[in-house]
Length: 370
Image (tube, rainbow, N blue to C red; front, side, top):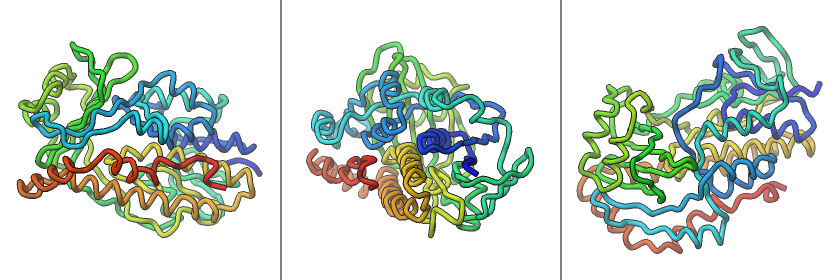
């Protein structure tokens, strides 16, 4: 038996399928949705993720459809620089980060798979350590079951029992716009209890994201709420929101996972959000899912020992998730004295210190797993 069944057809699931193929196994990806929707959002892919994509054989194609992430640093709502970013030093030390539309990355991963690997409209409803999986189309047994089915994973129950995601205390909005004036620089702005960011995409559009403190399941005010919240923030934020389509605004409450005691059990391994859903504050969610896929494929190619996968991936991803959550808390501070202190500390932080802090995250490479 050499079939590897992958629950979930997102970035982690598709990347895992590519890694499984490269390890000489036969992947089957089951995706609950009848078709993969085009999600209106962008992705920052840091150098560690680009190395993972290279290991999967699709890095060059992703780079061809992306733009370099020319980070303009972090500003306050009036546009004053809080934290400068040395993009040249980052590229020299770690490699070049890029921004790509999520739909483009998904299409590249999907098109790299042979016909018949991805099977839509089939959901996984249960799994156990023996490799037996119950799906909406019947039961099957696999050599390995990969849980890539997101933060509310069904497969995870067989590994870690019932795990309740944690609300981070804020909501996020995402959209892609075509502005009247070109935007060439990435920017992120921190205010009191809310943030706004933007990044150019390869076709002239701009990916926009925003956050605001809110109770879980708060009413969604849509584009009107965003325009009201950020109307007096610095350019080009009001112009970007003026170009937005209300029907293309995505809003989600932000959740992450507590640290799991293990990522594997028997013939099951977890990847991506099913294993370590994290807040978006470091831009590492998709990056870590890509790393997971490469690590899993490497283990299959060596000896199939999932304990090695767990030992490699769990400590690293949980450290990064903890850092992301802490950064999110700092970004969402709302009390004036704390915001003033945060901003003062950021203004005094040299770019070299930023690079040093990011080194443990960005230095990852496939060779480091061996």
